[in-house]
Image 1: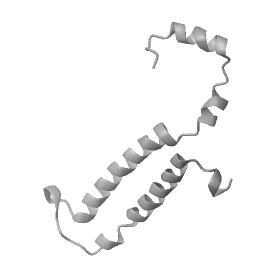
Image 2 (image 1 turned 90 degrees about the horizontal axis):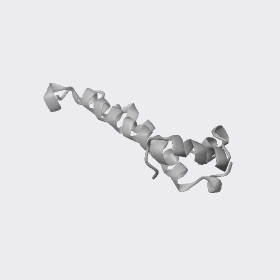
Image 3 (image 1 turned 180 degrees about the horizontal axis):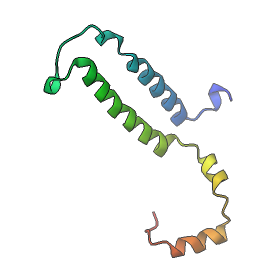
Image 4 (image 1 turned 120 degrees about the horizontal axis):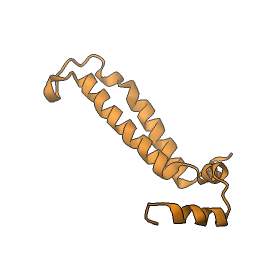
Length: 94
């Protein structure tokens, strides 16, 4: 797979992933003993924010960057069985 074959969502995914990978190292706070929000050391506060950022990134990746081909491969329904399944569903159509 070449870089040109990646979708925009996949490129954004990898860019954010690499930025988060770099930010996880937190080498600039190793010797900093300041306390910040609610008396937390700055390194712990950084890691708490990092965890929130990773959670948001993971949710975005599942919603936006998940390969649609995988879903089509995992759920090979034909149109007739899909219609009968939709008519039984209690969820509104989008």
